[in-house]
Length: 351
Image (cartoon, rainbow, N blue to C red):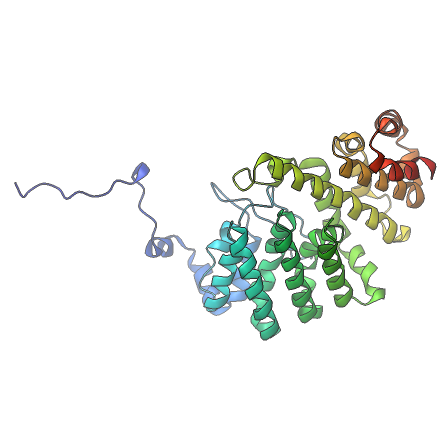
């Protein structure tokens, strides 16, 4: 009696339970010191880290050259780094970032409303945490099926980039790929807001220059969407059922094709590298050509549109790929019975 051990809750694997003191023990002292001295720089470095062990895959921040393209393998997934960001000295912004990173769409919608007000009220210097986190948050919003969330994200984006002006340069190569994708969102209000923000940020003579500067990261992003992602890799099955994942996938792939058409049509030939390594690599992918006879009409239409653009602006690419063109397009696509695809199909055939 009286000498027995106290009952202590067991922890799986005999691991020590998490706590703020335990986290402090594990933290890199240099990182802690950097957070205290320069929280914005420290947070930016945190965003640029990859994941190890069980961490979530993360969407890239721009590297020091401004051409970072280490995109997430599942863009819909909340970012574990953003959820745990702290020590910045800006408690209001830390809380807002955590809300923006939640899974629940309604929480994120309310957080975006708060973000609009916050961005309008703060100076550029007081928006550094949001600025560095924004490309990740924005690309998550681009993937969601919630129309209201996508519209609000683009409204915030317009306000933020307009306020940042030239200060957007460090994140532009990371932000522009999903931003360009959203130019072609099937919801008119969303697409118009995305384009409006771009036109407010860049004067007419600067718009093409921005695409040229970020071409590499844009092509990386579009290639992954078109050739690598599936519905399950693009959207976490825990966040959406199979039907919703399918609809999101079809929208993202279709918009990616349309963004690619825009890139081919807009960037002058002498502004592409010779040869066009990234574009040629995409055109040599079987999965690119398979989209010409994909089961979804929205994907087939946009794929036909790319072929039309290539015929007009980069015909030598098709001249050297007659085997692809003959098998995927001439033999299969011409059998397309869906009348909603026939205009784009006819244009691709007759140009």
